[in-house]
Image (cartoon, rainbow, N blue to C red):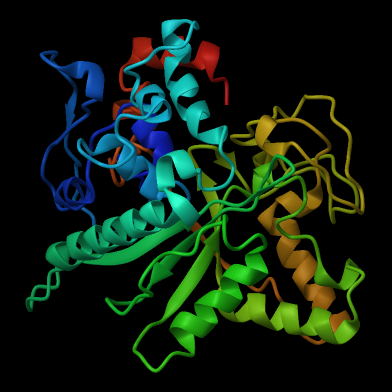
Length: 382
């Protein structure tokens, strides 16, 4: 339920060429070539699942969806711009070869809002392009869905909402229940707070006069510096507004991604106000090592979690989010964090469900072989 293709800006910057149709074919048991754009004429790894999946969702980033398409599609209005040439790697920056993918990705980061150079006046070229790509996602899911009596495979239309606040992660996967979906995905460029995303989903989907239904899944709370599960009751909002926001989250976000390629988000030892003694399982798969000397955020939140910096908060971990939800139930009368758990891959290769450790094909394409994984880790330790 967390898979990226070449339609995601970061996956495209790393050179991946896989499409949503390839993801679903692989999920259903077909082979997938781990191909990158620069692989022309080279032999590439080919993988197959030991056991096909029952369901899957492609969740490409809504942010830069249009920009990515315009930069990669020959003949588009933006294709020949310097920024797109940098993004494709046609123009290389003076850094080492291992850093070229990050240099390509950084070319988009130079433009926080829709650049007129790429997106045209008012950003409309990117909006139109993103809408067309969204239709491709819907069509790929529709074609993959087994509507026969066998019901062997279910595909979900979805996307990732990739909000970052002061270097912290507040990303969500947005999963729709059926083919009734909004005409375009809402990104963090338009919705600057998760609450804005939830309100929009209620208005355009849940409360619309259609069959649309949707849920969001919080992911990588371990990178959130305590912002993912920071309680509404500690905010400076009036109590009635706190209750409204708690109810909104409770109705829209029933799931949290507890584990994925970027680490464990369940728990961590050594933080303030944690019930019980140390739990050895809470040292498992931490991006920031359990032995790392780090400041405790205590009853506040921090910044720079995505850079593996700043203080560490108990509110970055799902176990303590559940506890906080019980406390908020007493204070507000509403438990905004009564959620279940799901695990996801978050790989950017389209290899849905390819997580068996003794055959692990990597998560970016740059780490698809053991040697490449070791070399890449020296540059991208996260």
